[in-house]
Length: 467
Image 1 (cartoon, one colour):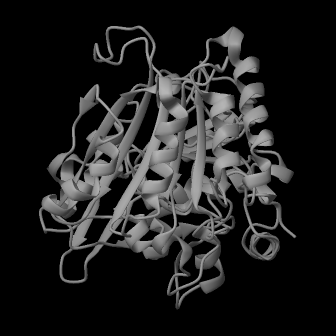
Image 2 (cartoon, rainbow, N blue to C red; image 1 turned 180 degrees about the vertical axis):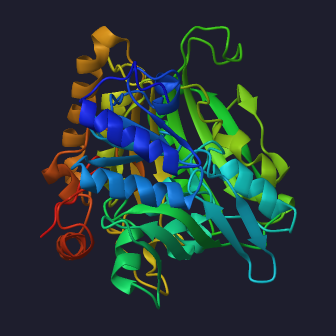
């Protein structure tokens, strides 16, 4: 570390230099070479300007960093991939965990031990070698632990529940710099809170999570011209009332820019994209999607039998960093009035700045309580509603305001507030975070916060203040 060029007080520089000598990883300050690259996030809507960044090499580095932050009264933020931003960590300490990316599979126990910075793609690949699959999300690039502590709603969820429901234990460093293992039998209150409470209770350095005996699926996407969006959505909604729990799906309405990076049939068009994940036979899958193919001519039809390792190709989520402004909510139903209202807001004739709007079917095992309770709330929702914009800097206010309009207009059909699995950087105020939980759950989270982080050291997040 080049202390002659770093910013901040002399005392903090000297303390940071001392910290650097005790770590296997790196300590970076604003003028240190590599600082900007180290703290860069996938989602750039809440860019950091931290006083100190620690690029951790192991769990001991994390423990040292937390103790340093507590000693110097620096709020702590944690970043693996930066897919799920909250608020900026200006003048705080950022622990970058991306180098902690080990995965160990126990095929006999059907579990994976996953380190703090590991992306789902690496876990999927490792589990597949043993004929197993994790409760991952749609993107292989998202960090596994950040996903799980926010709930985790993925392709296997309708059959098996939230990813958080299958976590067996966490290794976590709490605000006093102590490394603990939280599980059903050890620190059970902390274990309950970590599964849904996001980053409020400590820095997780590893988790053990259950795996499933899944090696393949029937899945892919159907792309339709979106001119008849209302009828497409109505057909999709009606179809979801007939599908088994082994089938997960969503429908996205996307305004594809007229850019060469997109396939010619989609370029510059308003498109309805139905995504299908079926964990039964290909023959049964073909039969189940017949009503969807009957909607009309498909611009693209990718439905096929796939190895589980290709599951990320179905949603084909963005891989490039950018300013992704995202909002969400949960729908208790999607009746005709809700459907018509939504299409009026986001359909082909609407003057909408939204790039994509997704309706995802929930139900099934998402509605059932796990064997070991956790903080996930509003399990009775039928669908999630997700809004995404990637506006130019001069259009950010317009995009965010329109997202607010959509959510407020759809409020007669919503349950709870933002969907915890997709909560974004414009949903960090205390009232909005509280609305993501049932009242009794939120109060218990505040009590656990008081026990494990009474000074709110971990507050650069979707913060739950101590009771």
